[in-house]
Amino acid sequence: MINTANGMISASSSSANAQSPGLKTYFKTPEGRYKLQYEKTQPSGLLHYSHGKTVTQVTLAHLKDKLAPSTPTASSSSFTSSSGVRSAAARWLGGGNGSRALGFVGGNGGGKSVSSTNRIGSLGGSSPSNSMANTNFDGKGTYLIFNVGDAIFISDLNSQDKDPIKSIHFSNSNPVCHAFDQDAKNGHDLLIGLNSGDVYSVSLRQQLQDVGKKLVGAQHYNKDGSVNSSRCTSIAWIPGGDGAFLVAHADGNMYIYEKNKDGAGDSSFSVIKDQTQFSVAHARHSKSNPIARWHVCQGSINSVAFSSDGAYLATVGRDGYLRVFDYSKEQLVCGGKSYYGALLCCAWSMDGNYILTGGEDDLVQVWSMEDRKVVAWGEGHNSWVSGVAFDSYWSSPNPDGTGETVRYRFGSVGQDTQLLLWDLEMDEIVVPLRRCPPGGSPTYSTGNQSSHWDNVSPLGTLQPAPSIQDVPKISPLVAHRVHTEPLSGLIFTPESVLTVCREGHIKVWTRPGVAESQPSNGETVLRSVSKDKPLLSSKINSSSYK
Image (cartoon, rainbow, N blue to C red):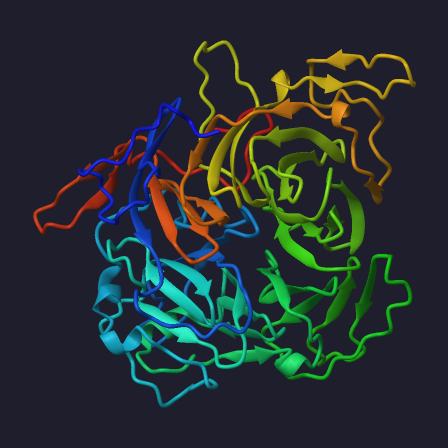
């Protein structure tokens, strides 16, 4: 249900883009008003050739200053909307002190000076040496990377320009997933997975510097489906993996690659003996790439996400199961089934204690790693939940000053076109202690979240779908219709919330406390009211989310 306290569209809205009837340009929360600042989308009038239906996903990438004028290497970080908050979530703007804030002060240096010929690129292969360099690009900034049809688009987040500054078209298949590495060491920091199963790694900086028509300096993996011919569904850099990355496919398999190895290296794995069981196979040769295959499930793996420390890997799939693995031990730790249908998305809390999932049962599920089961269901969406994420920049208020409560803020988006914000306060959740016998009545506790109706599940156990009376229900703090098309993801940043719809339209909603000003050059910019407020560290205290 849409919050009736939200205001209607105003002619003086900070967004210069026309809104559809009934869509509001701000929504209210207890801490203040979120305002629609501007939008990003594909170039108007650009025709796409679509190799089958695809859904837009968005990745946020931050490039810091170049290490050297001739070196396309940078320490950088990202979020991906389909995989939730990753290990970079609290460091995407940080240098050594972790306290740098994003300033919306026009464009990213020379990023806006890219010539018009750079707006339409094409992929017919890679061009490592004979491309023209964009000398106006200064090698830093914050960018949005998103896919629409047969193209990848790159937009300057800090610019008011609605159109992207770069587009790369693929001649044989649609890009469907992507990821950006915050700790890339040799320049290749962007991964792109295609509907055909092919995977590319490239340098984002190099793409922005080049004004040619081809993807520059690309490394090609799983070429023409040589390893796996099913479509890529999710892709992720492995935290602390020194260039290793993971690619999930629609046939239930995941592959581990090393970007420093030849992408065309031979790799053969043993036959999967039991399609219903989790198994890991390693490549037989040291030069092989991929180096390992994880058979996770029957049917598609829809999304993957690493915990912030990289210790655990969560996957959700078409079979409706969340699975959590100890990545280094290659072991299944826990998991369980949705109430109904497939799971589509997952995300970790920054402390690694909780996992969000969403899917075809219209519910947002909160999983506890300590108890290895569902501890809350979020009811509020009217259709499939397609994106979930914890807000790692939100600070839990403590109005009475008597103590601090463990509270989390998270968001979800769905095919009902709504953005929902939730507050999860564990001490207030009513938890059934134990399943009662037929005809009996369950007992309840309002105490600590570790009080449960059953003992902690044994390691490696997949839980069946819980009974509806067994799981505490929570309601959204805010429900706001943000797009006219079904939504596919959301990202929290220190100063905004980004929402994206399936058709490739992105909206930037600025947080309360972010003031709008009009500088002398006539460009509308955003500046943080509390510039000195530090970002969260990548780990938080178990008793506080500040």
